Length: 83
Image (tube, rainbow, N blue to C red; front, top):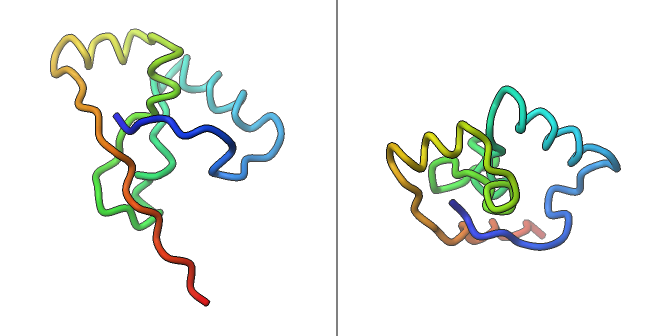
């Protein structure tokens, strides 16, 4: 799991975070960290959002933790902004 960063790093529209959390607490069971989304060019595999995992203990997360455990990782360095 990647450590949580405060703020709105994904620049979500108002209400979008609540929508994502509601969906994740239902079917999916977790949210993928924005820093490790596959289409974001991340050099690390997708990771579970630490902020979500710390706050919500879904049955999916409990099962993953029981079977495999979790490893805390630092988020990848953001890509440099082209000038």
